[in-house]
Amino acid sequence: GDAGGDDWTLHAQGGIWVDGSENGRSLEHPPLEKLIASKGGSTYDHHADMAARGLKYGPAFRAVDEAWRGEGWAAARLHIPTETEWTVGDYRANPGVWDAGFQLLVSLVEKGDESRYEVFLPVGIAKVTRYRAFAETTGLWAIATVTNKTDDVLEGTVDFVDGNGEIVASAERLRLLRLDRLGQGQIRDWLYEIQWHPVEQKSLAATKLPKVAVSGVADRMYDRARTDELC
Image 1 (cartoon, helix red, strand yellow):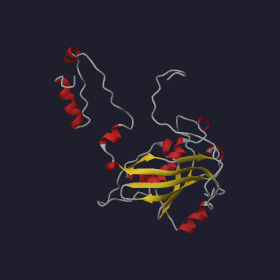
Image 2: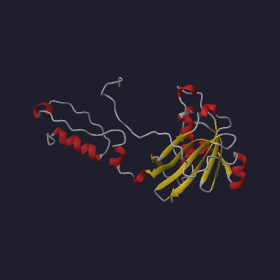
Image 3: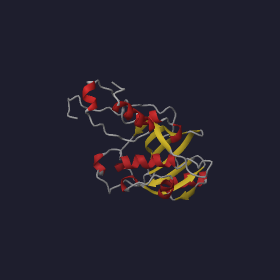
Image 4: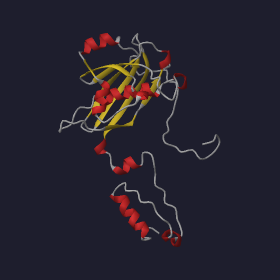
């Protein structure tokens, strides 16, 4: 909307502040090669892995060049996508790079009982910290570490690191939830909300209501509306 207007739509809200403490958390990692050697991970085709999960990304979100994975962690060399509508200068923290780090956590979701990947969606994040711009970083890579895991929930931390092992940015307690554990009402309310407005009953019968077959509930609501039961 226009500045000063009242036609903005609120989708999310939060706070931002300068935090001088890190609660004892280290701001460094070993260089990528040493980390992989110490953890004993193996390489995997990250984008093929995402496609197998039904996540087929375009060039704006294909920032992973090379990836490794081990027990409870995944790491990758990254680049800043340039084949996008935005430019490097548009963002201090490029969204394609952030998403690549989040993809690493998704890659740690194991196959379900039927040897197929369950669909997990991000539903929350506790803290995001940025120390400097990705564009100012050489040798950029990321590591995702699982901190909590159940059948339905996966939580972890994603660190973005430069070639010297210093953390450039981090996302803590990124929370993924298994899709089939989300109620339809919860999913519906993520982007939209239903608001009922009174209308004159005589005008409803003359109104052609579009029928959108979203679910059986929507169909029943449509049928009730056509018979004026909602007035």
